[in-house]
Length: 320
Image (cartoon, rainbow, N blue to C red; front, side):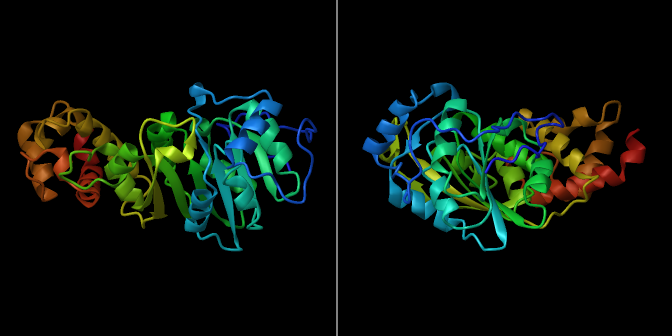
């Protein structure tokens, strides 16, 4: 079940669990219903565990919602799945039953003991210990299932949602699709449109790399411990990239610069990218992209930022 050969974390060997742990629950023909509060509580007590705020742990205790999330991924037989933050296995067990290769990534060693035991009946499921914010996703995918397209599924720990999504976009979102759970507020930021109050750098990058859609809401009452706000399920589908790989670092620099000063106009916001250049030159760059120098960044969409990026890239010899 556990694959010690995949080296995926910034070139450093990840510590893999190398033995099948026999503590606690025995192998059963049918796995326990970990979405049952009674069963979940018993399992956690058996392993001496409790939800850890440090890792943003809120366990899903509604089997219907768990099945709905897995169904939304529309997993095909020639695909494989990576799940981040399996918790007690509410989604994982349902993914295992789909029969495709599954790689589970969990940072909490205590939960690793539990989930590793629960998954013993399914040798096509691999369990690994690691930090999702430090993953080299392309290396992980190549080592896990290089001949399959990969889908990503997660009931994301709320405290890492933003950094986690930036990390996926930084590596070009190398997935066939993703079904992810976020706090309702974060989901709103991801799908926000230009001019919306919540529109920002995360919204823009999400629109550039993916087509994102909120599928359904999830009540805070189906988690234990109960979080303070409701959640939402998003489906992300990769979008054809407008820019060439060598152009994209400029897009990232541009987006980070102007949204760090989002109340400034585009003219004032990007002037810091052209030190020593006259304002006339910056205005010319903006106008050539069809952008009003007096507009603010939250009024521009991903396509407009991509066009501006390309113009800056093509004029890089004048900027050196």
